[in-house]
Image 1 (cartoon, one colour):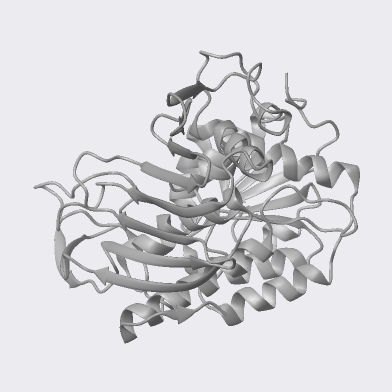
Image 2 (tube, helix red, strand yellow):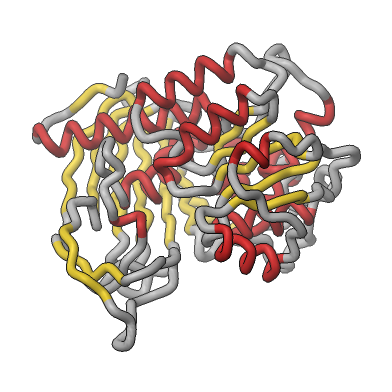
Length: 391
């Protein structure tokens, strides 16, 4: 079922970032037969410890050494946000393919520069890791909407909520200002929701009206490094109080290109919600609802007949969705599998040697640039208290 699990003759990969998400990239790459030849981290000793834990043989001293390694054909940028621009830029200039975590950059000037550079190198893959698109039932929703199954789309609503920063002694580098939009919940998880909404209905967000809130204006920063999703500091760990200006919560009204309406909220301070993305799309003939913590079930709403639940089963899905579903129904496919599916698309494109004249099925720097423009519009809207058109 689906596309091949292993990409033959795939180029070697290097991963930048040894925190939460870098090892996720490593695991997914191995699942599709890609050799991970090295890891670059922010601190050599910590990177070496991570490399030993996940079985990566080589640790690079710096980006220069990584880009000098002829075994590396693709660089996965999974470092802190402020480093994405330089690392992605240098990777492309060095003639390598790049898969960058979101956000692609900090400012629109940066993302536009990367977009222009990628456009001048059409034979190099320039991907952004909007992995949520690759849940099979999300692809099923997209296929059904494109086929007109729910008629004219009226609205898109939902949320993305977590609780890992609920307490003032929860701390991570993500709470710090990025020197750009200064967004955190929106930039970290809200961009995933917005990308998914636009992907599912096939339209871009045209304007936004946003309200932001910082419920913990001060947090306790531990002395040392705090990893993502590691919980509170603990009584025995020294810490210092610091001011925080990034958003814990946001609510955003949306208008899409054709007039479709939308609204979503994001929060990293919602107790009990670990990583919950919900999305509901209402149309003139029906509706769909999906939730990331129950990714195997799609709710299909109807007025003329009974509502239904569709379970993720490649035998029941449309071909576009079934191609990203590699296990029979009842054998759960979840978060790690979305990375595998995205990387299958990227590396399949690379191995086939396609250029800009061929279809690209993975999210690209075009999508990454759009999300930075959305973030800048949301930050401006919240600051000025009005609707803002997205550039």
